[in-house]
Amino acid sequence: MVRMNRKVLFTFLVFMMIGVCWYISSKTVYADVAGVPDQISEHFGVFDEEGILEDAGQKAELEEELSKIYEKYKVNAYIIITTNIGMSDDYEGYLERKWTALPDRNAVILLIGFKSDDHVYVIRSYGEENSEKKLSTKRLQKIQDDMEAEMRNYNFYEAGRIYAQDVYKYLGSYDSVYDDVIFLKWWFQLLVLFAIFTIIFMFSAVNSGGRDEITPSTYLNAGKSRVVNGFDRYVRTTVSRVKINTDSGSRGGGGGFSGGGGHSSGGRGF
Image (tube, rainbow, N blue to C red; front, side, top):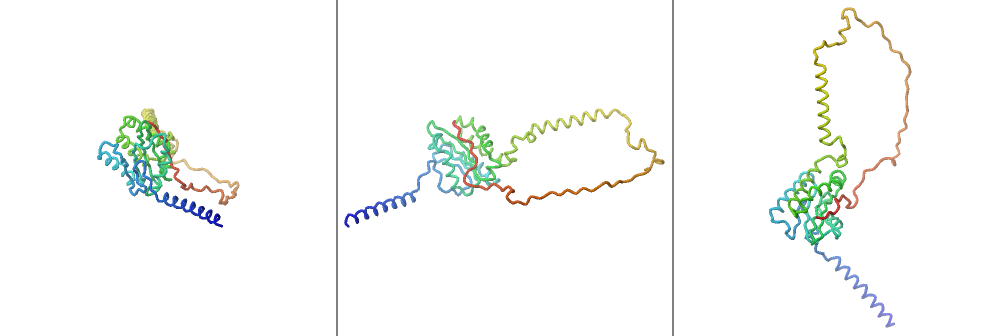
């Protein structure tokens, strides 16, 4: 009986310790590796806890550029610069977790990880509107291309400015699905206009030889010409019936927003 009581007591103490450890761990707030708050109330911002930017004026100027994105398009825009994240780290997972701390789901984030010799920069976009229609993977990679020279020179301020301005530009343009449509290319439209004006000019030159203009009245005698006869012949009436498919299962539903998802430019070293 005593042995049984000891076993029960030991089991009870083990479960109690497990419960206490779980409670403590659930209440523990782990420090963010980049110094970003667990909950973000601002709709734009530059997180540079380690002061990698040369001066405070550069941070303020970048935040001014990011504020334009939110004010115009209601898309949260951020830049995170840190020496604690590199290419070998789970930077995509980190950004996914930061996204859940934002004021709302529409967002774009640039992460610059400057960890020893393990450097990375990546852009993530979230939210149904800007991710699916405006800030696609291909466009985010184009922004990376524009930033690359500055990143290789460690000019993070100029790279961040390019990022903010490119995001603003793409959010204000047509949907990304039309990027490869040749009819929307400015050089193609200019070529078409040039061709049209050339044809009009050549046509005008050919028909400006001073010849008399011939019209239907040239061959008509106004005093004697008239309609001799005319009639309409009814042939038949054909009626076609098409069955309308009312099956609700055939209707395509709109794609809902689920999870973080979004688009990523992919990590790129510098």
